[in-house]
Length: 287
Image 1 (tube, rainbow, N blue to C red):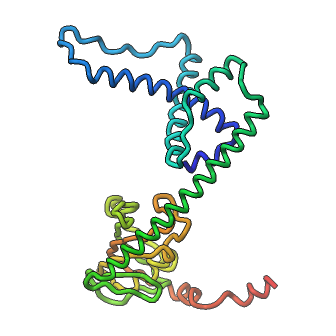
Image 2: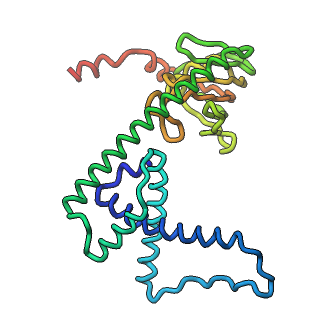
Image 3: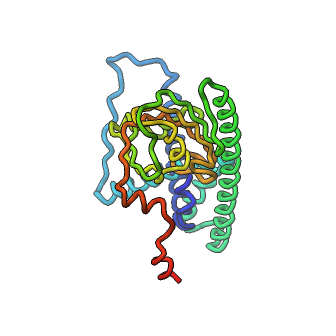
């Protein structure tokens, strides 16, 4: 769906047309498959021979077919995404438009086509916006309920910012500071259990400066020490907020299980720089 809104009007027109042709072919194939599925199995001796590989008269002919098939698959996926927005295009009319265009007898003028597609594009964008807002509200509601339920579990604590955490193993030594580099293993999921990141499966811990990640991590990891394990339930405001990122929808509450493997203090000069205000000389230069 995201890629659909980035294509130009001309590209949208081409993709829609080619997608319709592919959809017609798929419908025909599906009908054939359904009919075959209900027929009694033929004896082995009379089983039909395997279909021969497609043959083309030239490389150009095969390339043209491959291009059409590739664009058709892309547009078929786009049409399915549009149906999720409540927009269902009439495949018969799509096919008729393709055939009429190739026969140079389109029922619409170029101006009519452009105006219609502009209106259609606006509908798609409006529907997508409505769906995103509805999904964001649903995510917010689910997150609120999840956090309320989690807060009742044994050992769960809530900070002033709204962060919830549950220490499984406290660890030893000192808690990390903003300027420290920490090394962690972790698993991240949405409230429904959908996993979006996992350093364990990658087989490689993550190393980062504590003040260089989302606020929920910066605050949460200060409640555990080296060797410790903690569960963080992070509200959207301390994660990716109302925008989200790929794999994490807008207004998502995030659940992390984190193991703090190591803490590497920043060099003294870096730690000092991290705590002082902007350099006065730089500020003077800016003026």
